Length: 527
Image (cartoon, rainbow, N blue to C red; front, side, top):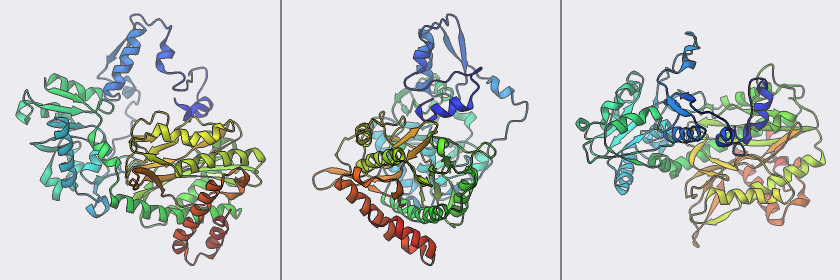
């Protein structure tokens, strides 16, 4: 796995049966190097690997003397012995245009233009989130990601075909969806790519090799049509949030900021002393559920006390969690889908009295966070370049972290969204309207973890052509963990201005909640 799971996979796997490797330091190629796999045939389920993933694995196995074989029957399926959970039977629902900010018809017109510019007649849309966004629907097929599991095929002349469960999708087949789309089951995918469907010898069909399953690639190849490999154009479209999506996201963060203020006031009151991590996470969820606009958590809450905070994507489970650790840190990474926006926030909170190392590390992380929040950059700047800004203040004191600094975030969609990221691999240029996280951290194995995360949106360029970020998240940063002497004047000013804005925007939401308002006054006072 990658650096997010290094500690977790070592702690939770049986060393007698499993070997653990951290990417990219130990990729599959280095694992296979020197191994004699001459004549070995390695099976794989082509439904569960992308075209590019299959090609990379096949190349690596071939270099080791083996071969990769696509197997239609997955032997793991047989091991369920009839006890496998049934597929989801959730019902899709419409995302109103007034919330989506753009109609399905307008989105299809933009997609048509992008295909024309690429010289393509059609595109296979193999990312379910992209299909849901394109037709303005959402669903509950996944517990924390409000989408329906389906593919789509769009032809510039013949229109859109949704590929999925006809019975489940029928309730949303009305209005512009009924006028612009048809539904076919996945089993008929191969029949769609033939001359009768408009795919003559001159047709050129785009597909994304990083998302199309290998199993769906074969019908495209067998059809004998001209294929063009390219990143999914819909993914690029939905990454650029329109003004309505951004406005909804801001409203969701005001709502969520009030929830976080109530929660942190409760936490600081000492009410959580002696409670277990799962109980603390449950209390936060209950506060979110009290909002009539709450839809679901955007991921399972990471509530790591003391040493568990050092496990980047730790998940507390009943019976396997611990009680709140005194004189240490609590790392809380959580988020929600509201009916007009998605949130993702991490706060690290002092429990009891923090020691000097905790304060030093927290302030270094905060400086990296502020560096990204204050960044000003020209057109064409990539996430790789911004990533260095977050790490530089930490490198200067010998600290670093093994995960990316930020990921894209969807609009009432998945909380991790491509194509952009702020990371060592973030090669996509940042553009106006992108919504990303800003979350540097530091993790003392066996001791505690620190991460400070806000969501940020890329602003329009200024008169000089330079871009900047708008911080969307509204929640105080624990001042007990800040060494003000480590902050530069401009960092100090940013923090005070941020807290003043948090106070101004959350106070009306908390009217009548005197205890929480008093806590907010203290938490947002100038440093």
